[in-house]
Image 1 (cartoon, rainbow, N blue to C red):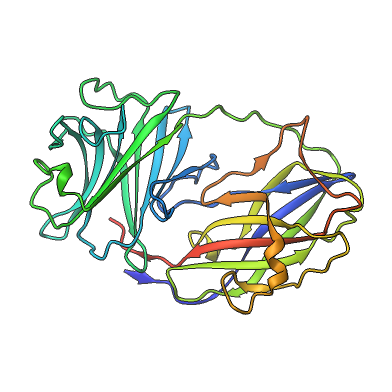
Image 2 (spheres, rainbow, N blue to C red):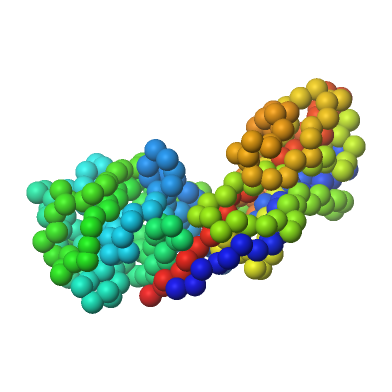
Length: 345
């Protein structure tokens, strides 16, 4: 188990701009495990009201597989079991689950399971929850990754991943366990459901203009506190003449190698104020009492990135317009990082 101590990090967004147009670049890092390492777009959806329990996924249309990473908020016990699965109607009974569990010897594993109409868990004869990995967050959270084929050819027990809405169902319960077989849905301490579209249209390749200039939106040499999560806000003035219209065409992340796996997500906000208004160049915790009140106007989203996300490119026919005589040139980078404690199997 290795705990990351407080250290100095650099992270941020890189913007590219075309003459009379602004291009924003946002790129990806790897998820805990290997999701997103191939540069595929990462999608995400919250699984509870707080958003601290969430699911991330990437789609590989070549191999017809989906790689999932589920994050569960601090549970208080390293022996808890977690289940993530799929249901036709959003019920936990009659569903298909991948279950991570810990036995009485402390060994962690994952099983492909299904539940009957009474909510009783049975282990599937065919195991189709592949490439399993688990990571423990400092503070008690857990992240588990696994891969599922669109179609496992197990028509009796496995959910068929296809176009349209999928009901993601999840559960958390106490352990350690002697066995997963016979476990009841009613024994879960917490559970929920979220509707998502797992398979999305592939984005075509877009050729960027020949003349582009880059803008780095960086929060450099930040002292990361040894806390589970931190929100950091960094205000800057765009070093461009924005008195006339530009178009954002692409954005990507800029993250030092030492910070990969720590930065969870980032957003760039425009400061909605009069063109001549000066916004304090604050750089510090977003919820600090020392944050200047004037920075609260920095709340219109311009770009967003999450762990594993690939560069986002706007279509050739349209970008995101910014600038003009009434446009304020101040923006704010908000970064959320997690200090992790790994315990991978």
